[in-house]
Image (cartoon, rainbow, N blue to C red; front, side):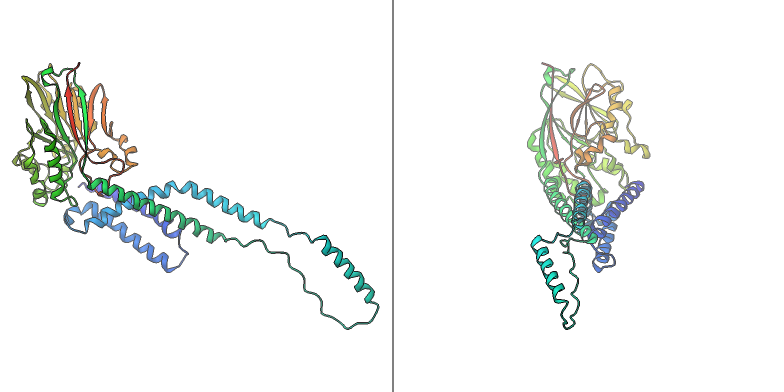
Length: 434
């Protein structure tokens, strides 16, 4: 994995942990207390797990130390989200409490009742009369203090009350959200059925079916069962073509080859095809070893090249380009090699991992692009950030006049958590105009 990405992740994690300390430790404990020291050290230890999980995942692949780090990343993220959302109600509650204390402090002492005043006057008159007669000296009466205002919490207690309430709400919310997200990420992918009309498609190819899967992310937390389930679900679709659109693995063949082996059992009428994603280039040995591995598993890599899919006496071009991440290793996308010199009278479907490759693809006259990469955002509200880099987050869209379908992916990256973006395998059929 790129060092720059790990460094950026570590900086972001440090900022988030500073905010969590401010709200969850400083805002809920008293200065100098033992509890504050204990919570501070706990947060430091958890913070160290973040770069370890992101940058050293290969060293802990398939073993239990990977789980605490990745799970804390998800909990950390949603704690921060909930605490930020609570900032406004927290400020309003603090203002209300302060005004309540100020109102109580401003209440004047109650007036003395008239009956009590009359009795006091009469007593004073009697005392004046009696003053003419000699009497024994008496002790002076103690002054009567005005009534105390109702007891209210002081400033420190109000701060602790608000801080602990917000921390409790954020904690429950984060744990519930992560629990739901784990169930989604580790469960069966959703089967999405999509129909796309291609103006150039020969009617004899009407209904040709593509099983589209991306972002399987075979890696530290998945296990062989993850791949076996995806293969089983694809085979149940009885597709004509299987398209694996990048980010299949997060490690080397030596580490993860056994987990990828179930891909050998993929079934389809016209074969299974694979293009690289950015994660294939993050592995220490580069993407080349995985390209050869998937070829040995019976899946054909499309490295800036195309094949003809003949069906019902008609032909469709299926092309694939390398991911943008391969450029640094001299293996970047080459649209001219993949699409140049073809018969433009027949349709072309392009496999390209990142949706933003659609701009170049549209200039080469493709009829449909199939992509992944975004995970549909994976964990809300990341779906609001993805459009800063990619033109489409999920689903079917049109960019520069060209249809593109972006699958949410069948796996997960980092935390085994998906919120608002369940894993997906797509059954996409192409149709001729009616």
